[in-house]
Length: 458
Image 1: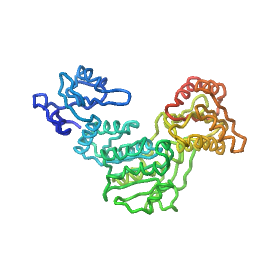
Image 2: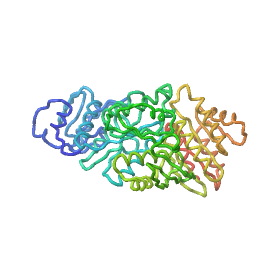
Image 3: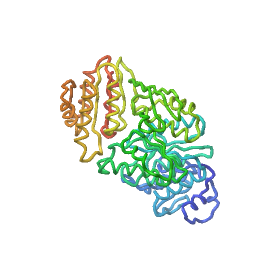
Image 4: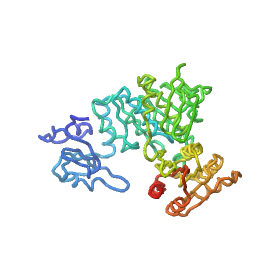
């Protein structure tokens, strides 16, 4: 959004400032990182767990910040707007941007697949509209406002991924964005260590609907055991269910599904019509994500053929299931993050690939008291899925091993390593032409470093 003056910014925040020639100057951008300030920008000083933006006000002003939003007064050659809570100020400004542009808002949440589904929705909507979206996974109480700060008058739709770590966080994001269309991908075990149960996770994800009235639409994975319960619940907003099984009463479904290591093809069925679709990303879970995107696009006014055409243009990214072939081997880089649902899906995908199948896994974090049980379940899943070699490291490596061996098949070779470096060295010596190798773990386990080391040696 442009044409915002310093004086108007103060009005948005309910703060009176002295009227000066500077107060009618337009603000170039709104930023929170003093290192990125350019002349004419507004700088918001945010206090975080590891830093305090107020310590960098001087640096921001020196780089040309015209106005500073701060909880503390600072003598500087810039207009100071003093607020009680800089985070709340940031949310107010973001809401004002949204209210001025007035795009249709599509909100996306879920335990897994949020970013992929958001990107598919963006691709489908982009066939007809001027669409804005979160970059990457800027999906929290800082990232979502930053996304809205980038809105321009030309944007007709904004697609917003909404993440959470605890109850109430989706509610906060929904209060800013107030989605017209809400999409929930699934209810899994991500953050179960903090929320205590899948029932609590379900409740937290449903916060995305709390601002919706009878004009709103909720689109969910109709095959998910929690989300399908909404089929018998009365709500003010309408609901659309997407899934693979028509018998379950899904409104949008897939049939004739063919999966292979690098993608899939299937037929979308909606209101008696059929549309053939091919994906450039692997896994049955991505078929569901595509159905959700298709439903969202149709509800926003895109015709079915254009929606499919857009979805087919999605190619994934470098750290969420990206596949490369190198040295006659196939490597799957899925190192961005991991939870039991996404780990299970990744193993299923690996099981369909050619050659010797090697799963290289790090820990899944934030599972709390369920950690041991769920790592054992994934080990068991690997054995049942026909994975040839399971190479694991981390605090729960032994649980992966125990789960794989309790299966009783005796076919899988489980190797436990004390560090990523030792795992990478062993894998370098072990791998050979024809292998398919999956790399996955929670972000902080740094499985991406193992992947990069293998790339160097492949």
